[in-house]
Amino acid sequence: MGADIKSLRTRIKSVNSTLHLTRAMGLVASSKIRRATERMLHGRDYAAALTQVLGLLTASPECARSPYMRQSGDGRTRLIVIAGDRGLAGGYNANVFRTVREYPDAQIIPIGKKACERYHGEMRLCEHLDSRAAYDLAVELCRDFAAGEYDRLGILYTRYVSMMSQQPEILWVLPLTREEPASPAAVLFEPDESTILQTAVPEYVTGRIMAAVRESYASEVVARRMAMDSAGKNATEMIADLQLEYNRARQGSITQEITEIVAGANA
Image 1 (cartoon, helix red, strand yellow):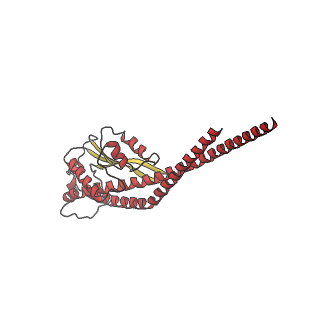
Image 2 (spheres, helix red, strand yellow):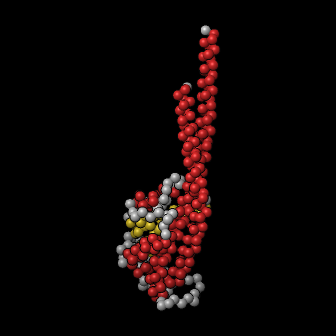
Image 3 (cartoon, helix red, strand yellow):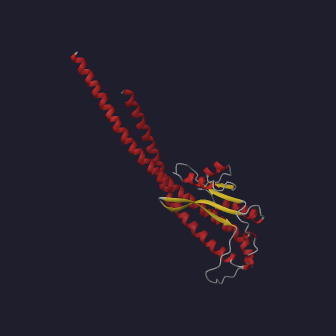
């Protein structure tokens, strides 16, 4: 009986430590949510503006011969995989890696500590990735695509739907596709559409990378907040159950001691 009480006391202490940890991590995640979602929304707006400009350019006949509009089927694929910088975020990282398995022949370019560790790439952290690093990566990717070293470029990121839902998705960035404008646009490009397209594509890829990283990071901190809330609730319930079991064991031990004393007095 004494051993059971000691074991229960140890388990209660251990679960209580876990509860304090989950609460602390939940508070840290909560403190980052607002800034992360603000940056995500700014990234979405910037990417949408770039996409609008690219739509005007690709609709121009002069851009049809651009190497960035080369259609080569679904051959050699490069996939930018954005995962979390840390764990303890529910199924966030696992969902990303599960999606990667659908493209076994893709060349992986990881972003996020967990992705870099898994795919042995250059360390790039989501939380601290700046536009300069994203631009350097975009220039390299655009140069290789124009040289024909691969056939399509995708970004695997996690789309923020709501506090309760984040979904991994792939955004195909290259090759560019020609879009018919909804209405004629009186836009004059100088010196010409083809030259502007060559300059704009690396900026477009940079914007898409940054927007995807910011959206993934917002999804990560929200997923961690929800996971820590769930873990904290489970730990609280476990402590209550263990405390009840401990009280019963303690009561049983006291009853047994009283019985032994009474039996000894009557002997």
